[in-house]
Length: 606
Image (spheres, helix red, strand yellow):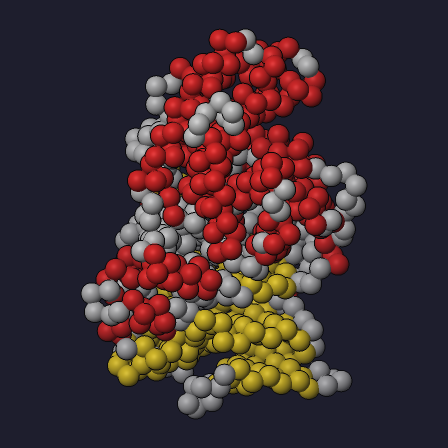
């Protein structure tokens, strides 16, 4: 209802067609008739109320000359009433909930609604300046706390839903007061590339980390156009045009995120700069690493049928948020670490080719279980807590019973310990032993990725502990694994079959099963659910051991790769090149070699 008012008001101002004014008034009168803005919980003080407050404020401002005196009075009174409710709620709850959840869409959207009402009501409401100043103080923190590399811990779906509002407020403040966060905020400058590199090969869909309603909820062309306009970025202009020209109807139909891509049209009109020339995406590197989140994405090419692989390992919420959150808690008592949309997925990976997915994420999940992601389990465990939606912070609460906050801040993390790009070769190592329950006494849980242009890829997984455990590799996929005649498994794919083989220095067992994840996406609409079906292949230790090394090898039928295994050494021949990957006896060093007729190269991973 709120965003409809914005579109209709803008359409009338641009066209002067009376039908748009008539319908704008119809929508405005409808929300004026609502006694309450919202449903089920946080009525009048959360997203539903703020979307309406934002839209009604702009409708009032843009259509004021065309409204009767009675209409203006009724709208202004409603804006004053609801803005005051949100303002008082934020004051009363400061330090908890959305009031200081500086990294969440609830904070951004609610404060946008309040700020917009404040500017519109200047001269009409004595509290207007309070609303404006409250929002300015809030967003001065938000923009300084966000990851400078533009990565988003919640994943692409919430990047497009909530992240858009970071651009809305920055635009509002720049227009109203000349304060320009586009010049000073690294997140605003770089976040387009987070979104671009998290695109699937066909660009229509996205690599769906975190809470994802579906794979099509990923595009917001107004943001691409704003990035293009603010920074003269031709790559952003290219993606914005691509979405509008080719993907608009499909995303509007398939996406479960509401209001969705079509109602954001008003922002596109306001932000599009036709003077920015498109640039070819093929000019960009094929891989990009986002240090704050420990996130790597690799593309085979920028063609629509490209293979795409992404992997991550980092601090809960990202390094900057994790450290800032604990600092704010110690210094000001502010609880801003709320990570329900960030799934426990260190060392998890997603692979797709074109528009076809191999791996399967759990989508929107309020009861996350250890095997919902492509991770390494120890005795079936991954984090302290399970079966809840905020696994990370629920685990922190359990640890606080026996550890200090400082100890948790320093130890309850994952890190990328190695990242190298050498031509088409990419090497990445993540280590995340600190995330596992302390009682497991894990000294190392690491995964090293090696690939050469995604002609194949290999994971070297190292598990070390002073105690004996069953180690489990979880492979969650869309197609069901089929036992291969030779060794390993085959995943039948329309874009080309994929072979998956696990080698280990200890005996292993394999278990196949499936999982169904069903979750209500918002209690505002409890009858709407997200459903994900997962085919799981678990490769695990045949018996309890202290240390174990696994080699996971992914090859493609059309590449005809040859794979050999001998103790702790994996050899691959692919496209006339030879590769050797060897783990030393102490499991502390990985030696990788590449042989061609012209040269030999080697890399050491520690």
